[in-house]
Image 1 (tube, helix red, strand yellow):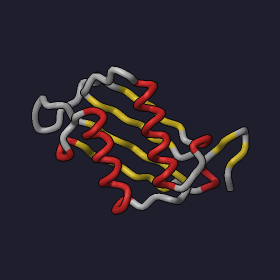
Image 2 (cartoon, helix red, strand yellow):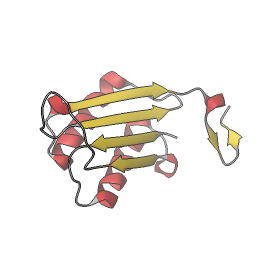
Image 3 (cartoon, helix red, strand yellow):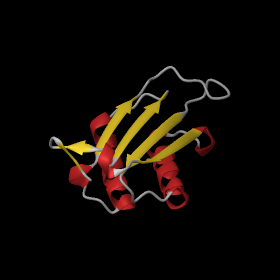
Length: 110
């Protein structure tokens, strides 16, 4: 935890680099260790958002440490700069998960 799931219709050429960079950003924005950030990327997905132009959906889950109003711009800017997807073609969903519902190393966090 935290976890970020990126789904985009764009083709990402260097997936490993993008996943590492978004993990660093999420770690910084949540003030949680990069060691615990899990990132997933589904690129080149069939998606439609008003038209055929590239779009992106980010789903971010964490036990606390989410501040959507402060995190939205840096995340949107990242997607635009790294994938070229316009800001108005990005949706972001934030999910605050209770510690008792998140398991790591065979135990819940709370």
